[in-house]
Length: 137
Image (cartoon, rainbow, N blue to C red; front, side, top):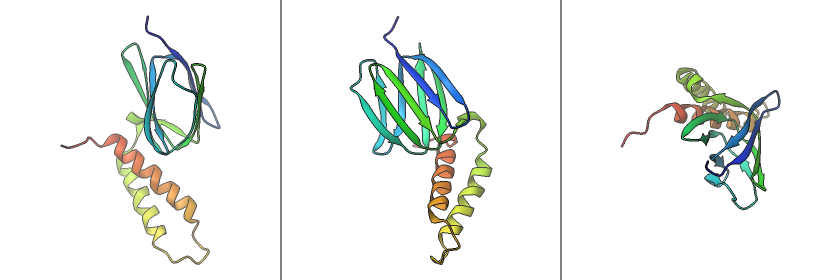
């Protein structure tokens, strides 16, 4: 059997996954990264994007809304602000959300718009669209 590590993925309202995995790939704030058995300890902020893990050749994908990751002694804990299955993403809804967020960000800074919230909404919508849109080469 391949060497494994323990993964726990949780959001504020539920536990998404807990078990042994061969590896995982996370959307880090400085770029995506992969963690394998015996990786060096790491703490990282996560940005909206696809989080993948593999168990004996089977891959699972979740879109995270951002969060934090801590890994040491072959144990990873992911605290995500939100998580949804990639296959459940409604691309048209995400495009409408992106348009609304971008429209809000065009307003003058007058105290009527929460820019941090609008930017976060824009980033989540972009991540949802990217997760479901095939790369064309």
